[in-house]
Image (cartoon, rainbow, N blue to C red; front, side, top):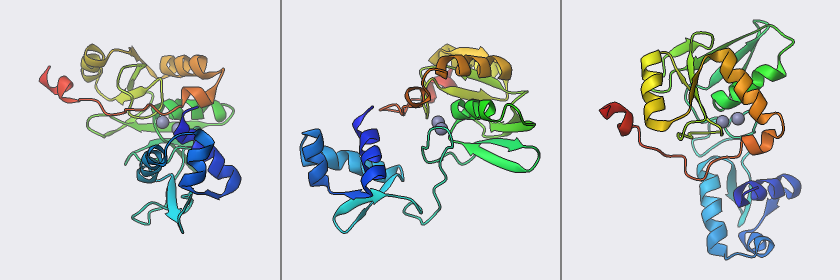
Length: 204
Ligand SMILES: [Zn+2]
Ligand SMILES: [Zn+2]
């Protein structure tokens, strides 16, 4: 488990803690902890309160409510997250398509439909018609990443640039379930550096 994740675990247990105490716990400088804290703050996970840090339960800086992914508990930051509708009534959102696929496992006994959004255009596409690139070098959220496309040729281009396997919904589902059946926590571990260059794709 990385340090940021451990800090969140500690906060879940204790409610609040100071940077100083954290630096003692991890035996690193306060500067190092500050860096983690600033990142966690940006991600909407925590906020500062009277010199301590606490979990951000109600909202981010804009006062918007932070929805969390029911699989990995990360805040849902995508403007169009994966959407699963259960029995035509309840809609559940996941942080990314990786967790979206895992959600299907959770509701496998119920009637569900799901919608995802093309990675480039953000147009909605039914998961049964989508093309998924699994396990590429692009890791915008959980790993192994699952990147959805509505257009097959775009997905193929993406594989050329970033690797991974081009799969349909059922194949992608099986792939993710197999890869993560042992340990959901580790499969959802956030990557350290999530940025990558889409320019590579467009030049092609
Ligand atoms: Zn998730
Ligand atoms: Zn995710």
